[in-house]
Length: 602
Ligand SMILES: [Zn+2]
Image 1 (tube, rainbow, N blue to C red):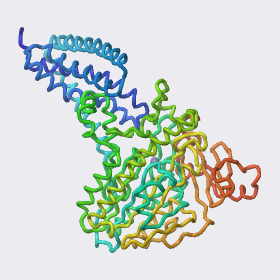
Image 2: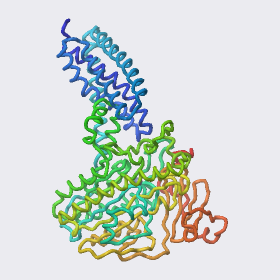
Image 3: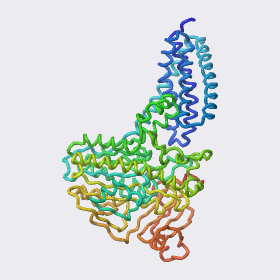
Image 4: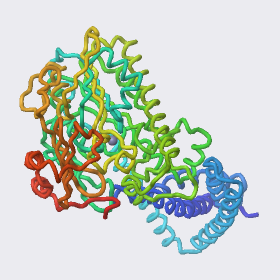
């Protein structure tokens, strides 16, 4: 047996890895059908090549060195790759028959890839040296360009922060901890132990509503104090890409910037692909972490050999966006926060669909939200999410209860971790010096109006959210306020907690200025389907679609919003109609093209 040169062994390993990566790329793109942008699509396409070559080249060299033959390298690379696929299928709970079929396909495919790698390497060896060098230089440059493009876009979405950083004199106000939980209904929140613990020492706002039924526009309202028709965040820019949404525009009022300008140290630890610098959510924060992106990275690399093996060997070591990660990061940050008062925003994602599927994995919001669907045979692809939300998926009562139970499990997990965080604050004597605001970005529907999840309607089940305000200092006992309050009130309330007087905020300071039941709150900026705008008062809910369909509900007589009163409450209709700006006018103000709604109603 002639000993192969290291160069040839390396070449064989690289070619084998590239061939395996080509298969992985097809699997990766197939399971991520809605990349946010061309750069993300490129990242998904090239990352398997980067990852597979990173381990395969050294592994192939070792195998080649040990065996001395030229064939051991590609054989080792392809065998490990095939083993990863098979073990992953076993981990995923495939049946014995399915495993046998997968093993057969992978074995035949692996043999073909190995043969191809050996032949391609031999063919390359026969090329003139100049051409061979040219080929390797081109491959090296392509690999380097891929690595730098993926790394650059990857790093960009992990962090952020544009605001002032603890400059000037330290403020006299207390620390402020803002906790928001994704997709947490007001009624569900009230059953949480952490909620009850905070409520025992704070003020509970029982009629608190957000203005948009999904994360980006609702959080934009929270941070800017503006309703959705004025901040314009979260409007669709493409009928095909779920993540193509308008960001929070630059130059709006900013809660974080105001606190930072007044000497607060500001930081955010959040989880949700929409809460990133790409969407302007980091505006005004000194520093900003999105731990979801670690989970998304794991997901992006899911169809690669190291990730397949890591899922079996060390699943807990993989980055995660679960509440435990947010809590751990928060505790780490708090331990080094120093004496200067801070504003820390934590956003927990756990209750968000897919429900009950979080063991070390990403929540995969960029993908189908069907993980709670466990019946074999019913696979709804990405475009099915709109159908799911719109009620096209019609489970029976038992299945609905099971799905709601999985949601509750995720709420319970977030509850437990928030409780541990409160223990941490108490243990460090931070509780007394820290005001806590607890809320959600939106609620969640469970077939009240035919669908499940959130993002496609403006009914109360997706707008009614918890709000608790616990001032710093000695506990004052529980209090409850039943007047309607809105997400735009949170920023001025937090500034009041901090003792910062800054006029011009649209909402009111809920500690002193709750204005009774005469207020009207604009609604809009949906995630899916037709665009709807609307308005909510204490007694009425009015909604109008982009095509002119109207709905009016008497919230006193019909709190479940089941009977459309457009044909009967004429006076009220005229009054609320005047409060809603037509969607074309909103888009014109924001210099956007006409509606480009995504989802099932295309
Ligand atoms: Zn959300």
